[in-house]
Length: 261
Image (cartoon, rainbow, N blue to C red; front, side, top):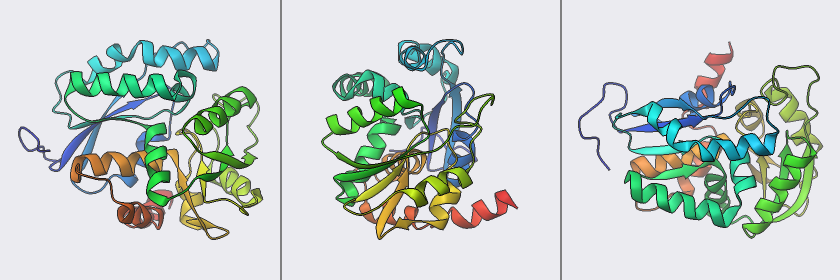
């Protein structure tokens, strides 16, 4: 897949990054995770802040055309839907239909964060999951149902306590909170651990624990960045080797240290 013309900061490809309105994590982690030559242009998903989580997640997909219009005629070579909750409430079957329709219409890959996690788990040969959830109970339950519908078994679940009175509970979290929940998760009988959500910072946790109890640790944003980079750079087939290198921090771990200094 080639750009119609080269872009100064996206010579390998340009990602249309679709971001929840108040999310403060996606763009920061994308800038660390996406490889050199892969750039991005962001658009904000459309939803009402005062609506329930389930309603807002559905609104994101209902108003997807308005979000895509923000990118206008930018020469996008792949789209990345950087929210997992919308997939949970949409359901796997409807999500697959939506993605197929969008790819036919847009003529470029359209990658959802949830399907990227699925692809990463398949690449790792993982079926039995440990989940670290920063969600309230109803979203956590929807998440578990979604992963089970994708053919995975949720063996372990650890919760990240949400801060009270924050502007947004998940976006106010930091990687230390994610790390504590990860450390509390029993990895026995698990093939992989998934740090859920694109809003909770996770790279500090994965930099410290690329494996937990001997099993790989991934996050929604790490999987999404890996999968969209594969779609741009190696569209024939996503590589498990590049995923394992990404989990190990290749390319982004040094940049993370600089960003947090």
